[in-house]
Amino acid sequence: MAAPFDLNDDSVVVVIGTGAGGGTLGNELAQKGISVVALEAGGRYLPQDFINDEWDSFGQLAWTDTRTTSGDWRVSRDFKNLPAWIVKAVGGTTTHWAGASLRFQDHEWKAKTNYGEVAGANLLDWPIDPREMDDFYTRAEDKMRVTRTGGRPGLPGNNNYKVFEAGAKAIGMKEVSTGHMAINSDETGDRMMCQQTGFCFQGCKWGAKWSTAYTEVPEGEATGNMEVRERAHVARILHDATGKVTGVEYFDKDGNLQMQKARIVCVAGNSYESPRLLLNSASSMFPDGLANSSGQVGRNYMRHVTGSVYGIFDKPVKMWRGTTMAGVMQDEAGHNPDRGFVGGYELETLSLGLPFMAAFMDPGSWGREFTTALDSYENMAGLWIVGEDMPQENNRVTLNMDVKDQHGLPVANVNFSDHPNDIAMRDHAFKTGMAMYEALGATRVLPTPPYPSTHNLGTNRMSANAADGVVDKNGKAHDVPNLFISDGSQFTTGAAENPTLTIVALAIRQAEHIAAEMSRGNI
Image 1: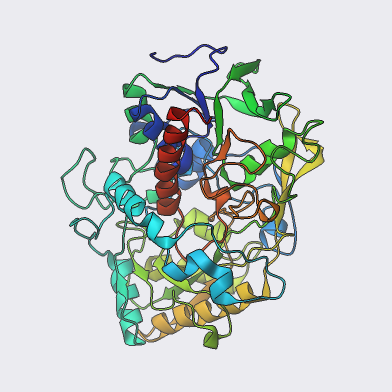
Image 2: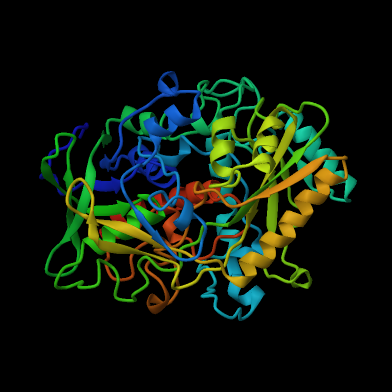
């Protein structure tokens, strides 16, 4: 049956969201001949639509609907209604991401076993053996055309990388390169080669960076088995008397409430909107929220240990030129508790445009110390910390019943406070990054706080035991036989690596499982 599909067609798989998880899953299922209706809250923007201006791009792509915040994280003070820059558009945050595509290390799949009991942390092993992921990682890397994998060359290093590499080697680091990036480094494949123009966060004007907006989604649509409904804001998931989901209610582009029937529902709305949707889908059978008998929906929110270091030099660097994040140092990514914390971190090249630098370098600051740093923008080099933060039950997404969105639905409140392990890791990473720049004669080094834009993980985590999480090893809800979570909210722990490659690999794996179970008549 060719798309579009009827609202009463209960044979379709409804996928909510079209980012790394939802967009990949939808395409994988469509390629297998399975009918898919993808509901996307945002509009469709393609490379010709992207704007190489930070503020205008943010207005075009970001999920600016109200959220609220609490906890001791600085974001709750500086950016109360913006816990993170999540893209509200076809392609989701694969439009906004920088392209870093790194595999988890083996020890990170079994964090509780390897780290032991960490006071105040809610650690758990993933119910997945690392070897189960090898083939799916390879398939994801080939799909995304990840550099330095599958015989694909690495990207060239820009000036920011050259400073980064020299600083890393000056302090004895060895595992430093332009990294594994889902950005074309040659002319092979359907996407253009990277043109080194920067603005990677604003949407790649060349289509060199992998994004489901112009890869997975149109490929799925081309099969005739996938329909994408844009500006479809999902309100709740419905179920029958047996507890099986039966369909999805959503507000269409005109604000009218629609109901799409479904054989299976897959939720891929990011770690804020996915638990919010489950909580807003409460019923007499699921009074605490759909699939929430464990009470774990919304809990264990992780965002990685982040922060940045900028070095100011006596000569221009012009860090904004070239690929934004083609540079990674992995010497500190391993687990070495002798450093005073469990887990590890990576350092990655980063640049912000001058407007965002002014907004995020030290929010609320002014005066000579601040302005002289901005005056030295041309001579800056920058790096970003990505480290494994600890899951905590009270770091969570809940419903704020006092604040409603444009459709009258309670908004998400995001509560987050650093774990002591997070603080110790960030302090260590700050010292490492500062040492790299100081070794090269930086005239000034600037450690800066975490940005609102980050990696959002957990809140619907995988667990072997239903009491410990929300979904099983295939992303299927413990409580609901035909409900799946298909985004980063299913992460049991966050690891030290950027999450997108793992989200894509899990989506490919989940598609295989769903297709097999459908063919057997089990769902």
